[in-house]
Image 1 (cartoon, rainbow, N blue to C red):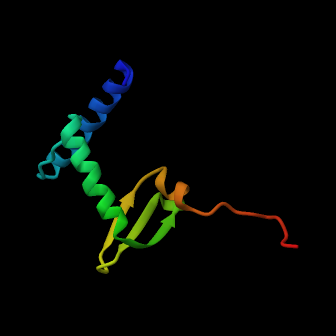
Image 2 (cartoon, one colour):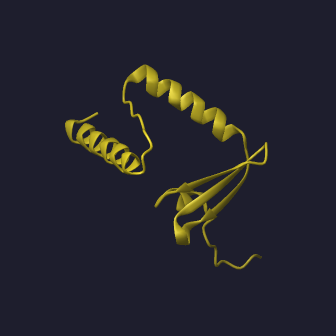
Length: 93
């Protein structure tokens, strides 16, 4: 990664940890290669358990429904737009 990119990542992780501390909840962050690889492995398994997705770009939220019936709500400015099906105004022939 570039120095500018590293600085942005460090700034973002610090901001999140500070916000969680205000809520009296502790957080941890890592950019260390082995710990990050483990986190990605856990995330991939978690995503693989998704059986339905509700994307609501207008409010910046995606809700994942997992195979055990639980819901995971993700607030994101990008993800709901990536998940939403683009509008197609072409008439079917």
